[in-house]
Image 1: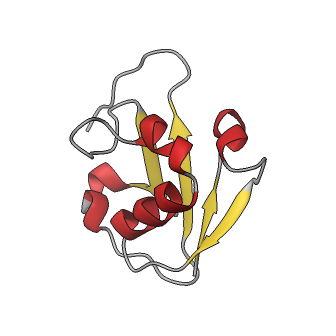
Image 2: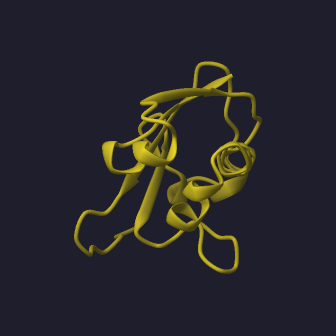
Length: 94
């Protein structure tokens, strides 16, 4: 099970839970599980096309998933998944 770290601004959608254990093989499965268990979280993570919003950064360990395989990035039992929403506009540089 991957461990997902929920940032403070999004904890109101996860019953104030800071860390969640999620059984998943990919980041996409992590997101699916989170949005299924906490439906109000979906609009804050995903756009209308179901893609991770441009201002939401997701890390698998220390790596931004945009630099890996995005939603197809593989996660394991020891993977720490961090969700980092931009506070006030920002640009992602590759």
